[in-house]
Image 1 (cartoon, rainbow, N blue to C red):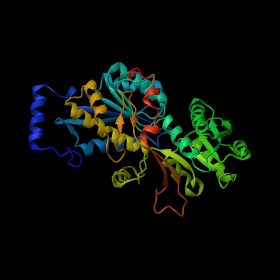
Image 2 (image 1 turned 180 degrees about the vertical axis):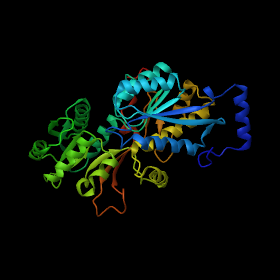
Image 3 (image 1 turned 30 degrees about the vertical axis):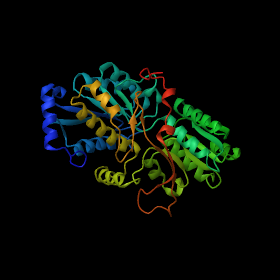
Image 4 (image 1 turned 90 degrees about the vertical axis):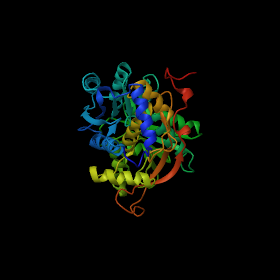
Amino acid sequence: MHPKFWKVSAVTMALAACTSLAHGQQLSGDVLRIGVLTDISGVYADISGRGAVEAVRMAVEDYGGKMFGKPIEVVYADHLNKPDVGAARAREWFDRDGVDMITDLANSAVALAVADLAKEKRRHIIVNNPSNMGLTNDRCSPYTVHYTYDAYSLANGTGKAVVQQPDGDTWFFLTVDFAFGIGLEEQVANVVRNANGKVLGSARHPLGTTDFSSYILQAQTSKAKIVGLASTGQDTINAIKAAHEFGLTPNQKLAALLLWINDVHALGLDVAKGLLLTNAWYWDMNEGSREFARRYYKRVGSMPNMAHAGDYSSTMHYLKAVEAAGTDDPDAVSVKMREVPINDFFAQNGKIREDGRMVHDMYLWEVKSPEESKEPWDYFKLVKTIPGDEAFAPLSASSCYLVKK
């Protein structure tokens, strides 16, 4: 085991070995197998993809590569952003290949499908990329953990933090016209109104549109101080480019409701400067995050985003929980995952609630200007830290059957 994370005395190791033998504790199949089910070839490949695989591999290597003297293996597959494909692969992994835990799960529809299967099969999944809150509500189980962020933390983080700023009290939304965008707009709009802000309107655009001229004009005409971008991926990038080209940003601030450092890198600071966004993590937050990021960069060629950091952190947490339980039995591991706090470069005093939500601080960032940036990937400056208990929906609001009311 890697000495950086665990320093165990010879006496403790001997006692642990005796306890293991006494209770017949071993890994099922004499191997601990982790599956990274992700988007390798589609729209989420840059924010998840092979970077997610490498982050998980790094965690396993840093842990020492073995559990109870047996190997830890990492496998991966492309779910093609299709729930049926993702569920079929997960079923094969659980039934045929002895996979103990599946992680990443970019794409909410895929994550929800695999969550149902995980409950049926009593196997763990850790969700690091999707935002859908059903994972800790109606689709919850003892085996599903939602780790990095969710829609509430994005809405509450960006909406509440921005509306409390002196120039953040009036909003207009540019929203991608399907369930994800409309739901995100509604959540943020409620947060804004509850904080005594005003929503002056919205313009809904088709998924994948490249012509934002009419929508930008509506945003400009509204005179709203904040233009919220209720979209993600290429739609958000195209909206930001159009706002820059049509001269919106000198007079109105953009608030992206789901933006990645990879998107800022693609846009460049000339276009993205001044943009507000909520993220769970940034590579230049502390020495631990910088150390992880530099090692990741050498393997992948880009800096990690919050989901990549979550993939590493959650994998390490799972491995520690298996060790603490003395077994890979899913129920015993679930208990330990919820008992043991998370303190690493990703989160301090993080905790997994009974509904599976990992609660940790979130952060409101502003994109730097080119003049403020000191090196490549030096893109964000901190505006506000949002405590975990404020960032995520309260447990009392959860509809998860595991939560005692």
